[in-house]
Amino acid sequence: MSTKLYVGNLSYRTTEDQLANLFSQAGEVVSSVIIKDRATYESRGFGFVEMGTTEEAEAAIAQFNGYTLDGRAIVVSPARERSDAPNRSRSGSRPGQGGRSGQRSGHRGGRHERHFAGRHEEKGWWNS
Image 1 (cartoon, helix red, strand yellow):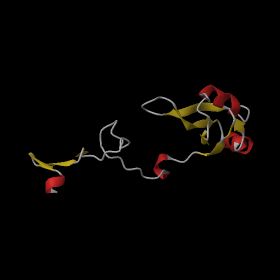
Image 2: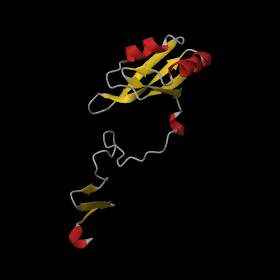
Image 3: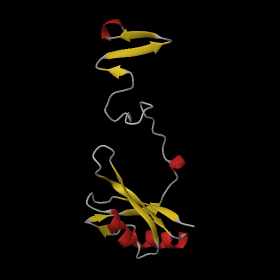
Image 4: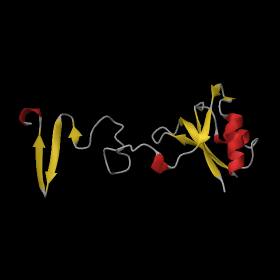
């Protein structure tokens, strides 16, 4: 059974192939991925490596946690399941509306828009 590892504090220059080549020293690498920003497609500075067995994953943690790669001391630990990750609320239900633009859903330039059963109501600072 394969085991997934979190690899953090990566240089933005590090590639998936470099990661796979490094971790292959500890055992079979099933996959390696560096997480990229959706908008810019640049590295976000972390990724995941899936090792062939639990023993190989433990060896990789022991060997590479704190290892200097591309001038940075990387962090290697067992990956957590997504359900264990902190709950991050998003201000929009459609893809691409992750709330990173600084605006809240329904808030546009000082006025609040409300929709009630077919009615549209607009409130601004002058009548809030």
